[in-house]
Length: 626
Image 1 (cartoon, rainbow, N blue to C red):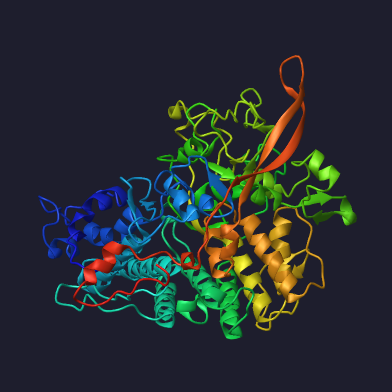
Image 2 (image 1 turned 180 degrees about the horizontal axis):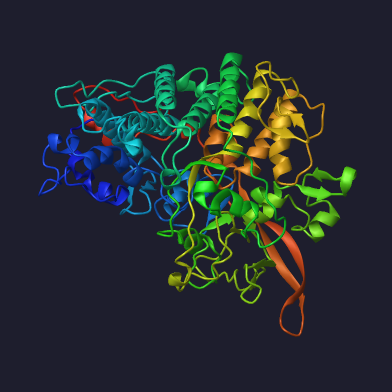
């Protein structure tokens, strides 16, 4: 944003990839590509390409190990540990990140050469591209053409996408860095490029304003081959998430003092607004839903499983996912490549769930009306003797543990062995799990190794930013803080039901998310504080490894949890059968790592390279404590 960047005319490459229709005789390409701005705005595909460029180069990476060094954000919080001690993601937890050395993130969709950037740089790239488009599109060949049904709303829809992109880029800025410098123009060299940061309230107001413009211009749904584009529900989901963050303790109160204390409600009106926005996002588009699995047994990525329903199913008909990268087989195996256990050919096993994450999944006991969920407890002899039995279904969707039978084909299936000396926990291997577990979420059990990726060239998936379950959880959290656990929504129920009963309270919203996972409902009569902890737990389970907890713990002002030691499991075989397969195990929890937390880490440091651009010309204030 601080310098003039002449990158606009380079969007042709992305356009060719994203808008691969045959050109018409009346729309000739400039012989040497776009050389001037007029070349862009007078050519249909180039003009569209200004927006398509953001889907190509600025969207989240198609796979979750997107932090420099192939780390996942889960390993930057208490969900997981990165198996390589030198991985850049470790800097978030060992206290060595700073304004000159912060892990970068891989951006770019399935079809392009992806690039590592800071969220700061990536967001301002998006903002400038969106601003350039909005400044010029009304004088371009991109029009709402009533004579062509395929282009009847082109200008309106593409303007809506530009507003959405500008809104989400600003949200990404705010989530990482707090208040930022608002930019609503392409920032030419004669403009004031060295103005200071806006306030928190001003930034939130601008994001919400852009969301409203996007909502008013975007379609409810796109046609199937354009499903990856942001629609009105994606803009409403962004609005709901922004208002939930804005109501949270970190975002209220004094910015320099890191907001309000944890578990503080603060301004109730903010929570009311967050509940209203979540309700609106849920109720205005009946296409999206909590799709219930049809399979509650292994393989946990097979058709009908929760893993398949949420992340691996065909994108255009997936009613859970609201906005995501395009579903493609290109770059689709990286999740397996980086996440499947060390010891599997061609795989690295980088993301190792912590014992804290594993223990958070409840144990289900009883049947029928007596069925209930209880906390896992190592002091309970039954739990300790069989720690991976009868757990919340989402445990099996998320965690690979010792004795798990991997594979959709019975003839190819094999066991994951993470006992000491087992195939997948040979401690002499550099990438051996540090905790005794590997991540399972996002992985397809139709993949048996990554040594020959050509075997799986037809496997595709998306990476989502917004899904329906998050909206329901957002509603539950906001409702509890605004009204309490079981007070009915004064503005009406959600369009969802559970056993014919409307979803109109915080408790009911949590119960329907749990019901989708075949989990018993919460007990009635909880206090607001007790329900708050249940909601935090439900987010931890339902949204694990999706990039939420890193920011949830911050917005809740629970950063101290990020400084707690993390643990893993030591599993010893107690005997072997004639084939060398263990016949029993003992389990011992061990500390894996001490971690570092300082309150300045509630916000990322603004890159020093951005601070020095202001030298002698203005002041870009660094975040507190950095």
